Length: 394
Length: 114
Image 1: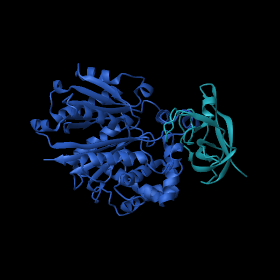
Image 2: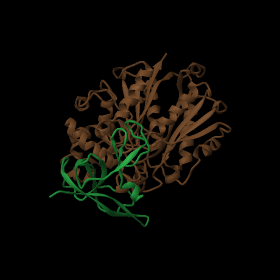
Image 3: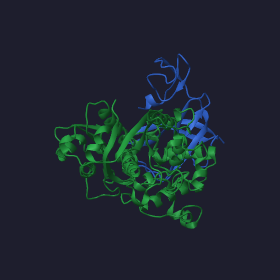
Image 4: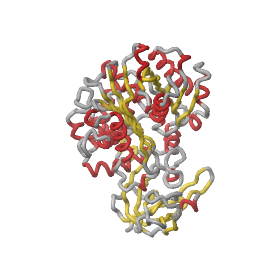
């Protein structure tokens, strides 16, 4: 197996992008990554597209074939990867394996979603189709609903208060203001969110105990990476950002069948695989992009990834350790909470953001220590999780 | 859909309960199952009240949760009131609770035991 590196990255701004269709977004992110990599397009052997809802939301299938045509990358191989909200990292994983195997040298991976073609209610219903059709979906459960049931148990078990969830929201929205690609560019205060008359209006319940500001927005957007063998990076004069390891693990489809619904086993297993492959432990991670589709998930994932002991993440939040200037910055991009969550794009966007951090190109949101970083892309409600460890090498 | 949904199963090899149906036991990989009846009551393991509803739901809010039936089977279903707590006893009833695309949908509806 060959070592694989991230040669180029790029993304569109995330948000409500009424002027662009799905193909526009995927194409724009791809061109930005190709430009960043500085490669001629004839080098690209294969394209992996991550998208969850083109068929449902945009009435368009076969999007990978359409993309290579639009980008004039014919006759490059083109595949669509659909793995729910973890489609992005799954597509990157497929690209990494293709390069590592020696079959392809230069691979474009692009993830995108155009969710605002439909109303918020339709988008919520679309994401809910990943739940079990007979045992969950029919009851009207949504992903916020699944997260609400999880949050109730996790908060009780580890004595996590609504204020801790609000701290995650405040931190990530502060980070989002520093990220020109972020969907949400708004500072929020504890007083506006919790236990005040204002909060009743500003921050109503979505799925108890989770409120509006505990949930990520519904976004349009796309993100792309160019992968290549690590020993080819020097030909392009780019920093060497290696895919040090990845891991992927699955868990039961229904939440009800888990022996302990507060145990996100797939997160732990995926991260441990990634650490092992990279030859590190969780203690070596200096910066992380976690899948905070809901604020409770940033807390729970950071504990299941081994970044903090169970029940300790709230103390790190209270001490500001997970802020950009803290000892272990989490979601300096703003995370899904502020950057937004175009579901197919998210896993790729996490890797784009982490690459910028490791290169030292993250501008005002740059973290101090940036040699090794982690991404966690959380599919389903934790039933399919993909983690990456990236490492900057000289 | 409804008939398939109402049945719970026990693995003939290791006894692990499973709901809904699956083709291989998660524990021992056996493909042999026997049907197990649900009990009349159970307890709430977790729940949430949803106030922002997906498309297709006409209610203002709804409450659902995961219930462990007294024989150990676990299932999600609607709960008739948000005024419940984890650990509360509920009575289970299989009801037509929704219409989707013109089709009557049956499923579990749980109400607090008075």
